[in-house]
Image (cartoon, rainbow, N blue to C red; front, side):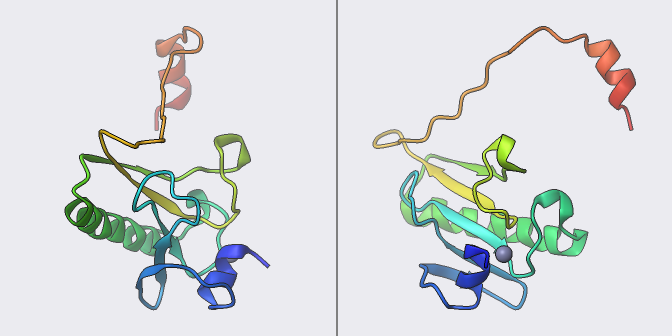
Amino acid sequence: MCIFCSIIKKEIPAGILYEDEDVIAFLDISQVTKGHTLIVPKKHVETMLDCEEETLAHVMMLAKKIGNHLMNKLSANGMNVLSNVYQAAGQSVPHFHVHLIPRYDENDACIIHFEESEKQDLDALQSLLKL
Ligand SMILES: [Zn+2]
């Protein structure tokens, strides 16, 4: 059984902040920063890429609403909103979830770092990937 499905079924306790028919939001057990929250659709789908559009829109609407709430209540200075897709990207629970990670100037253990790996041919990539 998936751990998030167990939380949804109330078989495992969690710090639930919000719940409706389709979506639940609870405090991540490992608080990367104070207030680190997960938004999770109740229907089990592995990743964002598998989520039906109506549910995905609902999850993202709640990311905005709960994100604003966390920013205000915790006086955060910023927030990372992210969803990891598959293990290669750091997904640890195979049930789609969006992380809300409030950011602060002090006591902030979250490091998100972008660096260029190797030069890419942007024209070739655009030809390959254009929709
Ligand atoms: Zn699940």
